[in-house]
Image (cartoon, rainbow, N blue to C red; front, side, top):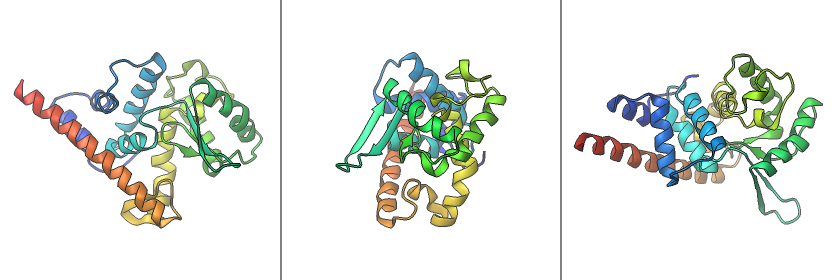
Length: 227
């Protein structure tokens, strides 16, 4: 995976910490949460490792923060009746994916129009390549959050929202196409490639997350210097 330089890499280097530890700690700091469930801990750990295999983990941090505030078992879609945004989390999200997305993917049928996982990847737009990425990284034993499915040849809801799968798909499959549409500001149109207004608003949200990350990183490095 290749992107550009980052604050997270700088901060980790300044404190002589592994990148994934620094990513994890800054994400946790942004949430103001002292404790995580086992699933949240494993998922954030996997996201941290996956992000740090890119050259710019900042962008992954910013997208995950903007999209879901580092939530993982999450599905979001617009209600066809009232147009309101519906969000399912936890077991309800996994049940929805297993009941509606996985069967469609297995049958090579376009799934419902929903966004899934920490990076909120759109299921109908990317389901085919996303499932290919799943089995690629299963073979590499990269998916450790839901490790009972690692050696399984079947697809699960947990597979599709795997942080490693989502990061790999974003970087390896999506970024080049978005770059063509949006030039160097591809991340600004991550979820709105054909709507300039929405893309602009999204870029503002991404920048706000970037400022939050910047403040956390600088504060952490400075406080370490003081000690």
